[in-house]
Amino acid sequence: MTEPNESKKRRQSKINSYARYSGVAFQMLAIIGLGSFGGVKLDEAFPNKYSVWTILCSLGSVAIAMYFVIKQVSDSSKKDND
Image (tube, rainbow, N blue to C red):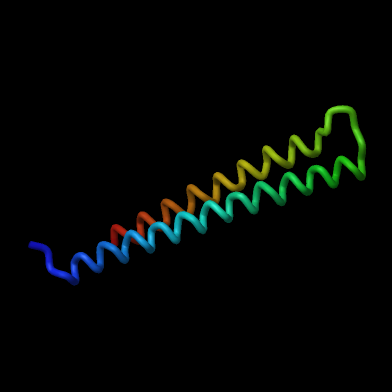
């Protein structure tokens, strides 16, 4: 039978993981949103036929967001294993 402290620790660990990963998701959304917004503003300032700035900034912000997500997840998994 599990002790109440172990159950409480397990529950707290799940809550901490949920909070950490939901924060990562909001950070990812913010990076992609700001990148896309910047691309739209650049296209308004420098009009072109294919909205190149929006495309480039959107793809660049997705790459940056993925980098940060992978970095944070790997850092948190290293911390959990220690």
